[in-house]
Image 1: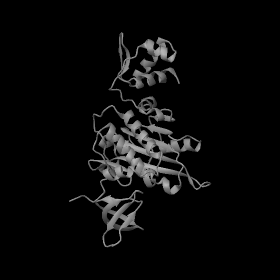
Image 2 (image 1 turned 120 degrees about the horizontal axis):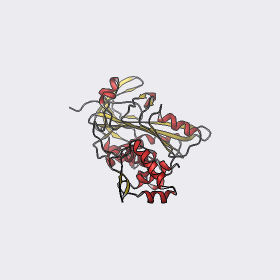
Image 3 (image 1 turned 180 degrees about the vertical axis):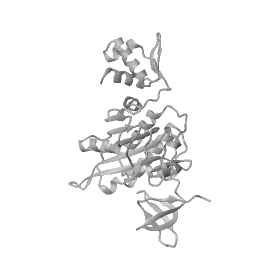
Length: 325
């Protein structure tokens, strides 16, 4: 670790607490001049660092540069050593983590980007990823059969929802299967890509990609997306991006420890706004509609379908929720 990164880690771990140049130099085994040079470079990178005579250097609460060290400082001890990379821009964090997974990367490996030029969404769709958003993909290495691994989809929605409500306190809701909405607009999209291990009939890894529209100007959404997408904030936003990413990663890794324990489905049902709603969907390319009566522990919708006595169990696909009158 170079001196600049090491200084940043100390400042992030002691945010809002002043550390003297001598303290930092002693902790890192470098000269005070090297510390001063590192602090100056960090300030040039956009970090808000106060330097006070007789007190020292302090990363202020207004500092909101997304960095691996900033995220790591907000992670619990059990996850502080996961491979973590932050990029200003990338083609797709899913592609980045997929390449790392092919090379044997461990459970928890995460890539974060502030912009994607070709983001990947669900069902092979592209995911609009302009600046102002937070895009990150995490590698899950579960010892699970393919049929059990599907539970990562609702678990990922729970993880994102918990992170937003715990860190930001915003009134968000889950739309089946794993989108997050606020004020009638989609603010989070999640994709899950399983990597099968045919030799054992199971899963070698799952890439969970999360895109959060944190402070994205509405005008930056393109085409039809502009009418559907929204952002957690427009304009002023709290300096909590590192904390939010860390909370989402933590919740996801915690839930992935045992996907067969489906207690998190109670949380999912509580915060999913499609329960009781009339929805439109397709079965074998035929349009259908019905009322969502329940969501089972496997994440499937239980629908009372128009003109059908037996209830429909919908385990995958897309739905449109009709406005409540």
